Image (cartoon, rainbow, N blue to C red; front, side):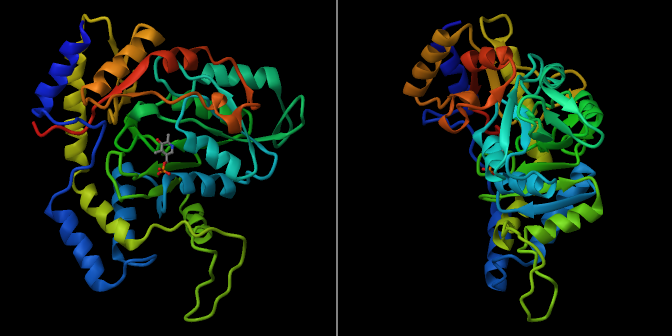
Length: 381
Ligand SMILES: *Cc1c(COP(=O)(O)O)cnc(C)c1O
């Protein structure tokens, strides 16, 4: 299939001659109304009714026990890792093929990331490779696990649901239990994605969501922490709110803490966006099936939701034949104003993670060479 055909196809379904971005948010009068309401109320900052409303909306939608809104997905990851006891020199295992935020949050705890491979069927953490890494490199004690070579404590595992496609979370959860490791899901890309009919992010002890401008719904910038226990949700809310003890006017803080709260202004935007989440999800899945049909019988492989999963298809992805083919595809489409993007550079190649410990990364390298994302803004069909 000629790249020119793909370009005209994407132009046709978007019915525009202008530049076609990867993903842009969609707003209507509701965002205007809620934002104006917040500004008029003057409650633009860390307190206000929209924060509670947004948290409640997310809780109901995901069937989670607790949801705490935060200033970003990255801050949500940092706070969950910290809350789970990740400290200086501890080890956290994540996948090499992910957005840089996952790795940065581990560094922010002073901890050391270890990178394992993704699976061919999900593009997210591979349970088999995780287990292989642990068996080869770690030793299980009575209450915790450490690396054989360096004796560092291994504390947590952070799988990521790439582009909204759920990882094999049951198998990963089982391994975490066996090895006494905390499971924290990076569900930043997977709001609206389900594994065996259960929402992603509700399997681990904690999970994070992101509402950055490019995500399925946005608060401008923002995130959330999902917790399995109501009590832990309350404690997380406390540590992201400067750990201030409730008092009418005195300032007393009972531990080292963060200011990672989501402002009411952002939560108002989120509350308006939330009302359209189901519509966006439907549109995303419709767009995915349009792409899937188009690429059938072509020399590109459209990446489909894994088995046992319902994906939000946040970003549509196709696999090119090889890296050279991928580079030509990216260059040609971007030159014509179709803003396709490559998948991330493996974190192990970035300067801050250069010397990190890693397992075999064959599948990660395979995808890094071949995957490109296609414009994925919901179409008005
Ligand atoms: C978007 C994203 C985050 C969080 O990003 P923020 O911009 O800080 O909200 C974290 N991990 C992944 C995989 C993401 O895609």
